[in-house]
Image (cartoon, rainbow, N blue to C red; front, side):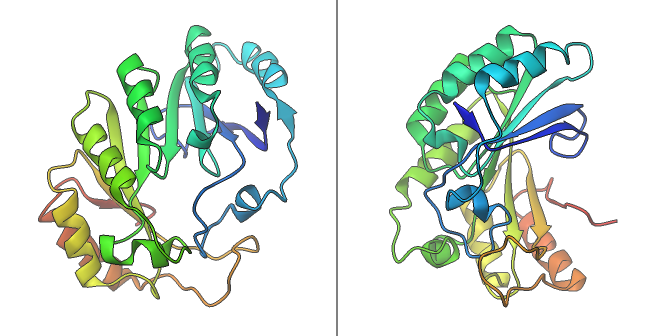
Length: 230
């Protein structure tokens, strides 16, 4: 497996844990507000292979709690399960970030207990999903199945939405809330622009709007919170 990025230590990607973060390339979505689009379109070169990574991880025993795996979309990689197994065999926990479009692989890793924590994106209301992820159309049933799997599993998880002023509104969060009602936890995170975002013209919602959306979601998921709301 080729790794397209490695953050050697972070306290942010897996709150409550000291972790390293692995970035894998490729994604089946084309979100126009994506922060890591260089991983999506293949322009980011590989920085190491898994042999080099496990040599790094061996030296971090006793220093790191676990590994956060993100992308891109990690579940595109057929050898992801073997990668996660080896991490766990070395005594580290695993957090997985996913867009939820690969429920068969998600089911396998949940049944095997390979992920200590799964963070799944909910991009928008069902009606606006394709637009939000940069596609003309989308069969949403795989995403719905992944939501169902997580909500019915014993694994710890969260759903989260990156909120873009031009793409999200109050009705969208009412629809998201109805969709994931009863979920364990849900986070909103405001869009932040950077050089790697593929399209210009997107903005973060106002703080007032973020709190309005959070209050809507709390009717459905009481543990809703806003990331970075200091």
